[in-house]
Image (tube, rainbow, N blue to C red; front, side, top):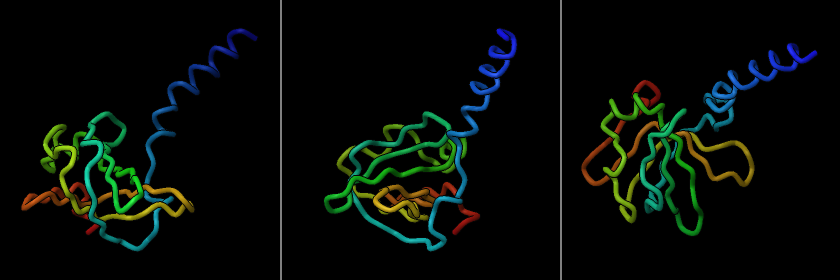
Length: 120
């Protein structure tokens, strides 16, 4: 019984990253843009790079590509400062009341970061 419990626990722990990694299924099909102020800069802690922006009075979770892909697009931690204005393009969450966007593009000033250019 102890072996079965240990094996089950190991399997669950090893699959946790797969549950954290999500595709596009929970997002609207429509691609939209929004402009806001960065309140938490780019984080490259996996499984996806993230940032937070404030649009009007709403705080939005911005989900980017996996860290390596975000870096290849030019995004790095500290590159876009808190307080900066950015425009993001992507697919918003379909979950009512959830302010999250899976983002394919970030624009900061003249710089453009295409983290999913194949989806544009």
